[in-house]
Length: 401
Ligand SMILES: CCCCCCCCCCCCCCC(=O)SCCNC(=O)CCNC(=O)[C@H](O)C(C)(C)COP(=O)(O)OP(=O)(O)OC[C@H]1O[C@@H](n2cnc3c(N)ncnc32)[C@H](O)[C@@H]1OP(=O)(O)O
Ligand SMILES: CCCCCCCC/C=C\CCCCCCCC(=O)OC[C@@H](O)COP(=O)(O)O
Image (tube, rainbow, N blue to C red):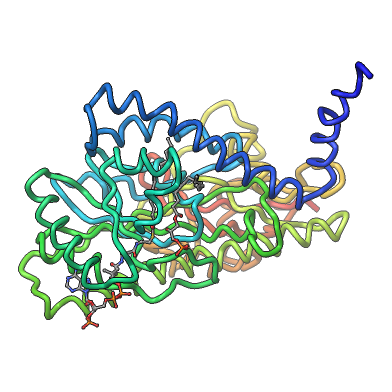
């Protein structure tokens, strides 16, 4: 009888280990439950700090939410921080896949920034109350005229109180492999207030979170903050083109990342099916911005590295390269080199992927760099890296014969 309580204690880890569906529900319930608890904790803190509804309460909410990702096995990889360094009010727009977006949002949420949300959220228990305390602007999506006047008021408040607003212009959650057409409210808002728009693109969650298939694994979300779009001097006549421009920019970034994700996923699936498959796992967090190729020679190799692999990356990068699926041992040596591809003066990582891994020019460049002759370049990682020197580099995988 005494040991009966042990059963659920053992059952949970067992089910977590054996059933993906159980993990899905467990994590979802944990997420909702824990957010409710955190909100309960945040309510008195916000009341003490501001005495009521105030955008400054978002600071408290941001701090409280930031650790939740660790419980869910999520990582956020942010690029383009510099674009958020903009003074004064602005409108942030981002794609919207799930309530998990809140975690990414809180990773980069600037000061004095709150959101536009559907009015139903205010009834979500403690979460609803904390949303209200955080100054979230609630709109009735079913009554466009009401929503429009609330947003017009918000435009004025943004200016009067120097507030930034985060809008999900898709207007609803969307797990498709593309963005939904944008609603116009965010663009009216920005034009009415004459403030810039900062687009933020969340990478697709499909490699770790699938609602229909009931899968919720660990994974990395890439958040890409794009350069701001100015609206000064624009009028309501410009709304459609502003909306189209923002959509096109975000869709291009989303699709580009999706292509890379597909590439990575195929590589992982290949590894699972072949004992000695040679796979390429792009490094986890390289800078995504490549500088133009410098007209200067390669940087001098750092000291204390193997003379055979003079510009080898540190150990953790080896796992980004070719790995034996059974033993986990690296099959290839990662070596960085200035990309030999003449087209690689790129502004985005998609251009980098065009470099053929086994091209003679790559081989020649690698051999020139490392003096290695008894092997071949097996693959070229799909992301660009920018060294401290400003050199645009690639991670090449050298496979010894
Ligand atoms: C400690 C624990 C704490 C936990 C805390 C967690 C806190 C985090 C909370 C995170 C919140 C996340 C919430 C996410 C959501 O709720 S998403 C859903 C709500 N958001 C939206 O709907 C996005 C904004 N929607 C819009 O902007 C729409 O445009 C809307 C105003 C609602 C109107 O919608 P609709 O009619 O369906 O579409 P259109 O865009 O086509 O508009 C119709 C015509 O109206 C014109 N229009 C739109 N807005 C305006 C305006 N402000 N002023 C003037 N005219 C406007 C638009 O141009 C269309 O006309 P035309 O076709 O151009 O002639
Ligand atoms: C007693 C009430 C119980 C309510 C329980 C629900 C509480 C939710 C709790 C925790 C999640 C925390 C994050 C909340 C933010 C959710 C924002 C969100 O994602 O809203 C969806 C909305 O954008 C679009 O809605 P639809 O896709 O159109 O539908």
